[in-house]
Amino acid sequence: QVQLAESGGGLVQAGGSLRLSCTASRQTSLVYYWGWFRQAPGKDYEFVAGISRKGGNIDYSESVKGRFTISRDNDKNTLYLQMNNVNPGETAVYFCAADQTYSDATNPDGYDYWGQGTQVTVSS
Image 1 (cartoon, helix red, strand yellow):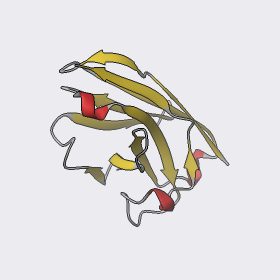
Image 2 (cartoon, helix red, strand yellow; image 1 turned 135 degrees about the horizontal axis):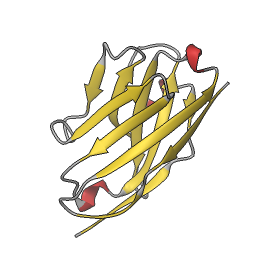
Image 3 (cartoon, one colour; image 1 turned 90 degrees about the vertical axis):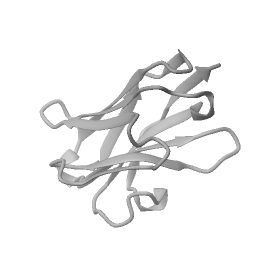
Image 4 (tube, one colour; image 1 turned 180 degrees about the horizontal axis):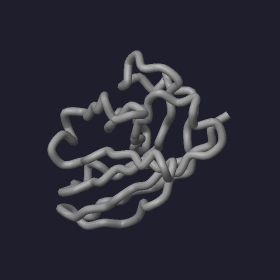
């Protein structure tokens, strides 16, 4: 089993920046692909960004491309999401997730492990 724990959420003003972290523990060698999703109240999970274990595959949703950056420190078993120029519509709970394979990065159903999420609130 892989355990994931997000941190770094909070309140940020529109146009500001925030960096989320996701620390993984236990059998991280099982994971091929790491992803960030978000879920706003009353909405489905939305894919934000993803990265393969060695960084060879990096994916972003169109809505965050150019503003968000996903990265991973394998030595620290930590996944990051640098969020710049955020807007109020991006208020959501942000989750990191881990997938043992790489099929459809944007489909939350394909991920095997999930963290508990961290709240990001963007004020106008």
